[in-house]
Amino acid sequence: MTEQDMHLTEHLAELRKRLIVTLCTFLVALCGAFVYVERIYLWLTRDLDGKLQVLSPSDPLWVYFMIAGVFAIAVTIPVAGFQVWRFIAPGLRPAERRTSLAYIPALAVLFLIGLAFGYLVIYPMVLSFLGGLSGNFVTSYTADKYFRFMINMTVPFGVLFEMPVIVMFLTSLGILNPVRLAKMRRVAYLVLTIVAVTITPPDLVSDILVIIPLFLLYEISVGLSRFVYRKRLAKLEAVAD
Image (cartoon, helix red, strand yellow):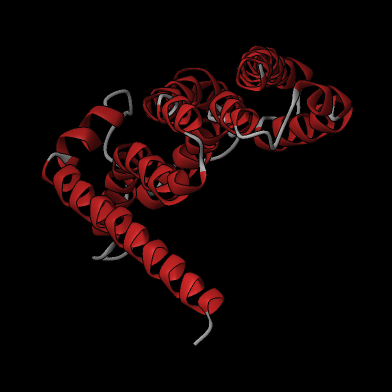
């Protein structure tokens, strides 16, 4: 076996170890969330008139799994970020290690902020719009469909709100820079607009209410990238001197 093959084997073993730690964290968090999932379910359905329907004996279990899964993801995100950092840390300079490590707590915070934005702003807005269309119909929600809809309206925003931290992290590694992000602005705006239009009701007000925060997120990401890029250049110049 060549030295290159040995290095590749070591990297794959290390990657496997990091994936196992992340998976174990998710499973432990899932079990922990399952202890309180019934209380969470009652809180999430507190404003509904009556109880949600189920169409099979296994539906309540899958609904509880979905709810617990979201909470488990929120707990796992910083752990996954730390495992990624541990995997790439040997290839970073000491200053890059310290800087990139500081971004990990922000991953969990921004994910929770994104979930809150989706749950408190987008979800009730979309549900109200669709409820208005069902005035001529008998409305009867199943638990499975109701929570799938809720998760589709919240979890994507948790992921999208990670954008500033990811951009800062990639900028600190030299993969991204503010100039490149500025050139990508039109494409980024187009993609974010498509995402906003896809997940919101087909009316202009709803689209604008989602598009504006997403555009602001991108501009914040560009500004943070510019800040990190300047600090990185200053450090490189100091080292060169």
